[in-house]
Image (cartoon, rainbow, N blue to C red; front, top):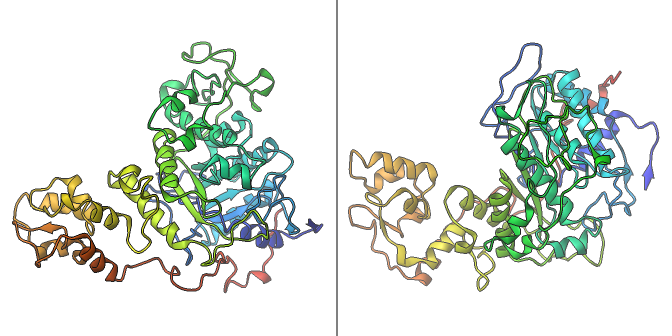
Length: 510
């Protein structure tokens, strides 16, 4: 470990912004909040302004680690404890000043704050919570904040942080418990799933006005199994085994682990076990809601041998059981020399990551299920075709469909027809018969759709509905892939200092 004393804030920023570039779970949509008198910043429902680097990473927020020091030795992580890298840590005051000054200069529109684990999870989470508290209550920052929840931290600290943050995330790290034991032996699925469930319960319960006795107080979490009923998740037959096997754990807490804040007991609350109740922690004076933009997570793809079907099944289970807003996939990048890490001949599996994102979109917006897209017999996506085309080729008995009669959900399953174009079709055909020219104006990608649809009973061109023929036709089309998938990739986060001559500026943190 390399330790440099008296490090400047600028040097810390260079180190800790670069260390955050591998964390992709930082979208910012999902919350609508206007500016307030005496405050600085606001958010809108569509999300703050986004900018993406060539490999798809969001860099619109000030994206930093609080510290790259870490007590864990995850084999895939550049900041693992056994690596000789320069270590740096911010103070809460430094993060606040950087955020406010960059915001005032219009360099950023929000903050994404993650961290290594320094000393222990509780200590780290308290530092993050204090940083957010200062931003909200001292600097009156009303803009967007995404904060990581540290697995293993006390529930009451995570609860308090949830009132200051817009979105929180807990990284699942690897799709299966076996992969976690192999590459991150200091982490457990139990500690990762616990804060996820806590945030879900909090969003479902604490945000309801009826749960508050006064506007300046918040209801606490009950840590008994009756509230965090993970066993009920395990008993469901449709839950993938790879997620169920780690879900059976007790979330009871001892009285010695109660809130770090003043607690106001509420004996009128029902449904809470008094023996395990955490009571109430003091809520911020301005009510922004409890994690109003929801929670997300991230999985590393390609570091362990799970197939696409396993990954997609876990993704589906996370959406269903933990109400996640997004599951992010991060193509494995070999940053450490370790015999436990795979050597991928083609480099990071970016195309595989892309296919998983496309499948994730189908799960969230198109009504597909993981078992429809893949199976144990066919566990991986065809990298040459997007998942919807791949599904359609395996279900040709459903095609062609008549666009003037098919229902909305049938239209969504047609390659080349998206959510918006399907809505336009359903609306427009109420007043007129649609033709192929009309579909093109509505945004339908006809070069894919023409093989699977008819207009007034006629196909656009004579087409043989045969799998090999259609596969050749679809593969021959040049798919529009995200920039960088087919060329050289540079894993550099865009610098806040490019062309800004920041080197000549000093930031006063006093």
